Image (cartoon, rainbow, N blue to C red; front, side, top):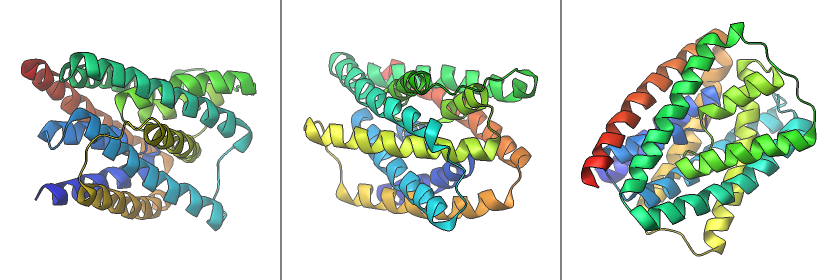
Length: 262
């Protein structure tokens, strides 16, 4: 039953993640934490692998189908920064996890709630906010670095904050931001996985769980792309806002759970 739960959660999260460009990890991580199916470190690792599979499929499919909206001139420096930040964020989490153990889960959940809340408020008010048109590659690297640190530390692979960055700093519409977000997530997750393997810090996990979650991620990416094509920007925004409410509720509950457990 546990591995079936892994598959269902990763499938549904990846469908929503592919539609909105949030990767799915921001849904997978708190959902698995909610049911305490594995340790915090293992959940973060499995979530990252699932997001990698989904984003790899989605980005590759977009490039091959000619439906590519990724701005490589901006997206690549962002991805490089996110990759470097991802390694730094993973080291930060490892240090906190080793020091505080279960309390690390409470810190992750509380930070995720605050970031999601900020993203929710911004998304509601974005039509009234004057956006930027950043072109500097150096600024892109710095922004990507901060994104990577937050995403990797929280174990979400990317998440809603990516969309806010593309909305505000680059004035992208919802669907264009979604594709660029998945591209950045892909590069940062590849780097994060290689760093984890290279430093021999892969947490214990069941291969059956990993394989089913990766399968769920790829299937979710396929279904999410189909749904995305049939939805307009407003529909994607509504789904995104609904997901943010769910994530905030789960994050608050997880914060309470981990604090109580600690």
